[in-house]
Length: 232
Image 1 (tube, rainbow, N blue to C red):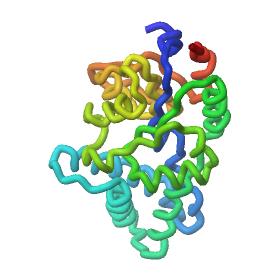
Image 2 (cartoon, rainbow, N blue to C red):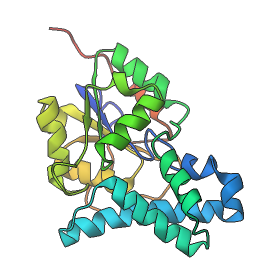
Image 3 (tube, rainbow, N blue to C red):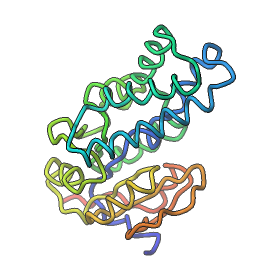
């Protein structure tokens, strides 16, 4: 699809973790305490966090994202030999104040000033999302903070993407969905959203049925592709 695929969208909906918030910043803030296993701990924590959402959805055994994040951290701490209740508590606390990526705040401010609707659509538990957004100063920019707590299943289930349609009162094709996760982009595209894959780390494309409408290296690369919505 052409680079102007997003130009007609009335709302921009963002995945949170890895897209707005740098999940690697959790361990990075405590690198001195974690030591030389910091990179492996961070990578394993994130991978298990994702896996546990998918597995719980398949099993029909929902637990909120805070619980899943804690379970994934316990696995990663065990794997790296860093089992320490004090360190665990500190790492979990950092998830409530993750750093945003450098271009996020300015990009969101620009989109908001142009008159677009903005929302977060995340697997994250509501209190996690609100805390991280408030900590980074972006909470007030969003029209909706949409999470899966009431639905009790996780992306990429189509019902999760439907939440954004219902909350924003728009058709799927009027919504541009931004995520750093290729699997999330595939799920959103399958549902009917326009999609922008924020592929900061130059990952290969997923072998799934739907590809991104645009692939970008950072969130601010959205701005040249869109126009402000027309006023009535």
